[in-house]
Image (tube, rainbow, N blue to C red):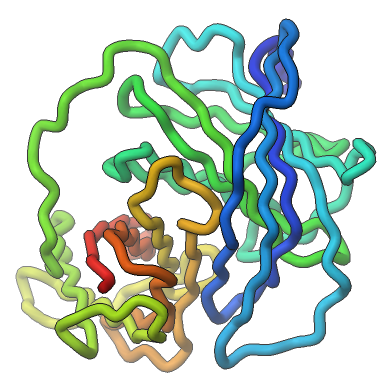
Length: 295
């Protein structure tokens, strides 16, 4: 179904980032500038992206660049099912029409509130001619950052960052954030184990998540694949404004035993980070979030 939207257009220009199905991808930062003013407002952000993956290396095609235009309604009347469209073009403005499927989808869209309290991982549908559509729900009015991750055919994996503001009264936090390494989700407990007490910025680190059945007090044995992997990990640094340099998406190591999901990653610079672990148990995707400090 085509959605006709007259609204706000956000333009993001960036150079590709190397993709990898078994390790982490990081994307250096972007800078936003206003492009033009008309009935539709264009905001442009430019980022030079480069990535080196540890343990998994392959030959890549030469880097190219694309443009991603995020289109939102001119007037957002609800926080529910907000219709968004993302148009992918090359640098000359020509439509990019063909995309590879990676991790079972053609596009992964990570939506976070700028205070990192809210997280959503959704998958826009490709409607043809480089246009992706999705209608995510937002928990409340406020400012949000969107990281769109896709792979044009014959090119490397690419990530863009865009901003959206949901109008209305922004609610005050109801509780302080907790720096705990344990999270309980219904009948499942997740413990995050780090090899050292202190997390050193720039140093590669193994993040081990132990997933346990609470009633039986034993490792979970019924984990199922989620998007082709045992789990997924998204890491975002607490920054203002959020940019692509604050975003990391990691995939698990293959040697994890039952009830354990391991990742190899690094935290590029000192600061506070929010991490979200996603895994599939009994056909339900679970999300466990943790705050970490890197020094």
